[in-house]
Image 1 (tube, rainbow, N blue to C red):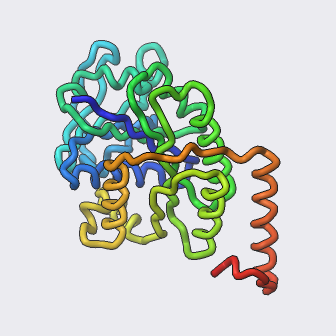
Image 2 (cartoon, one colour; image 1 turned 60 degrees about the vertical axis):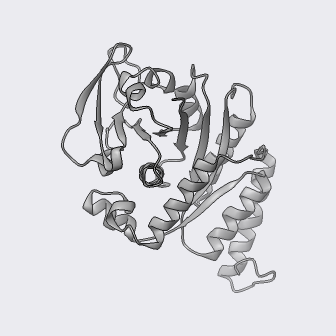
Length: 274
């Protein structure tokens, strides 16, 4: 069975791993066959899916011995972030040769990949199958700057077989931060997949060592993750995003700096925070 690689990326601290692991869980709840691959050196991406005990080893000639196991709702869990014998981490092309992945026959392989746009795209090097990149962002300027970098890489050469699936706006605190992200997304003409509000249930699930789907299956947040999974599975037509130029990004930041200053000083002229 052919499978599609789903890449979850974003600046450190935006909640990338939380999004990735709950997306995998939500896809599995939709009846999809899923593999979840963590690319962080600490090897903790799959922990909410399969618990704390060490994973059983998984043997594949090209990678040597890699940890793998079956977790929540039959999700195949792999940690590929540790450097192997030649000092290299496993990119998509090498993970795609794992016997365990072939035997599992997943529809989707969800990759939780940390790093800058350059580091993430280095992991994609050599893979010629289909992939979609979803970038997680908050309303923080550094996160939006990283998002702009990912948009630039997907809009440039070297993306054969892949495309930008959309933006996941995470941990937003209210209408103002939603307005900020919505304005940036509109300016870059990129698809906003879903908005995930700030919720203490994320902490609850982390304290329990579970996904939100398992810790609070009837919660509004769990329903949001299910809607996200449904959108990913539909795989609809997407617009071609356009990154902001350095001057355009500076102008955008200046505009919102002025809006924030006006709000802080009590001078609200255009209702931007409504």
